[in-house]
Length: 257
Image (cartoon, rainbow, N blue to C red; front, side, top):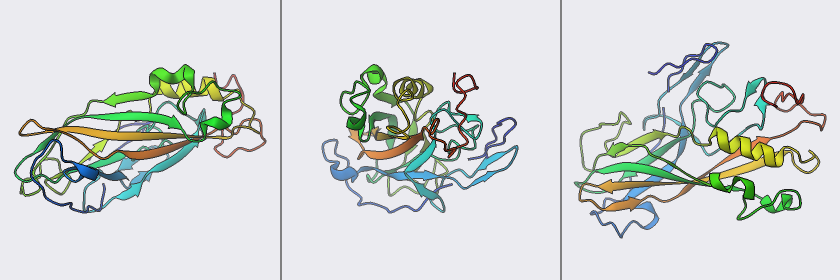
């Protein structure tokens, strides 16, 4: 169990149902559809959120909650500023979520996770091209944030191993917490580009993130897992008479500056 604090807040961080894949010998050029090194999906731990605490079960194969999408305010949600995603100190920013489950199906060879590559796009970005200069479904002004890499290390034992070194509940499985999945810099850039649009044009911004894990086997072969996508819907309701997220529409209010 882990504890973190949000004004004050305690945090602990469980996950999932695993489908064991086909066991295959190690080959760097043979990972069709992630058969050898596989990204199973997105999961979150069971959450207990109270006035002062955020408690999360750490994902493991005996129990977890499958996910893949989330929604929150572009500026803030019920008074909590949108700083990054997920945010372990914000009860409205999926504090127990965005864990990727990785699976090694090699026989007799472990895989060491080296990094997770991220690519971002705005679903339906063409709708806003008359107001926002867009290239490859992403605002041109934010192009330096269109790709990101999380350098995260973890060991996934062979599928025939009996040693679970990751506390995942299965030797060949690891759950990786993606922090930060969406950075503060990217969120600020998206605000600058899309917030000026009238809410009759823009009330929700679907940010799609494609993640690809890269690992190296004991023999030195590099494996790229199958890419999987996650969608964060950033709602912007200021000016349309709605308060879906309790969003503060005062430009001088904290989080809207």
